[in-house]
Length: 206
DNA sequence: ATACAGATCGGT
DNA sequence: CCGATCTGTATA
Image 1 (cartoon, chains in turn green, brown, purple):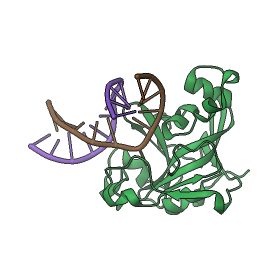
Image 2 (cartoon, chains in turn brown, blue, orange):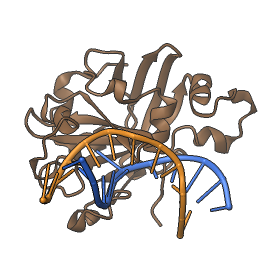
Image 3 (tube, helix red, strand yellow):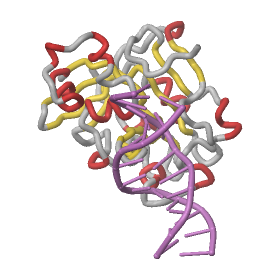
C-alpha cells in the first residue's frame, strides 16, 4: 500500500472527502500500530461555508493549521471533552479541511478497546466493536489522536494515510452534514459521504 | 474581563 | 432529551 504524498491533498476538500473513503488512517503509537479504514467524511469548504471554522476567513490560533499547506492534521477540542480530526486540503491560504467521522478498525483493535473502554476486546459484542470508532470523537479516542497531534504533517510523521481500494460508486451515499444547525444555507449542502455497506457509519440517512 | 455556544457522546 | 465540561471566539 502506498503512502499518500503532498500532491494528493492538493485539491478541494469536497474532492478530498470523496477520495478518502476506503483509505487507511495509520497512527504509530506507544500502544502499537493503529489502523482504521475511513468510512465516513465531511468536507468543510472554507471562507464561504458557514459551517466551517474558517468561515469568513477566521484566522486564529485554532484555525491556523488550515491556512497552511495541505496534508496536515487539524485536531480540535469539541464540547470541552472530545477531539475531532480533520485533514487539511487545498492550497496554502485556502483554509479547507475534511473531517474524519468514522473508521472501521483494521489493526490494533485490542489497543483501541483499551483506549476507549479500558477493557479487553475478547469480551466485546459486535455492537461494542462498532462503537469503538463510529463517530468523530470516538475514533480519535480509539486511534489515540488528541490535540497533541494537531499540526502534524501526514506526509512526514507517525500519523499518515495509505492508499487502498476505493468503494464502488454505487456504495457511496452523499448527504448533508451532521450537527451544523447554526450554518443557515450551508445546512443543506451535500458535503457528507459514507460507505453504505459499512456497519461503522455514525448516522444514516432516513 | 466576561459571556456564550459548540463539526459529541453516553445515559435516561 | 439532557447534561458534562472547557476552550475558542467575539465583544467591550
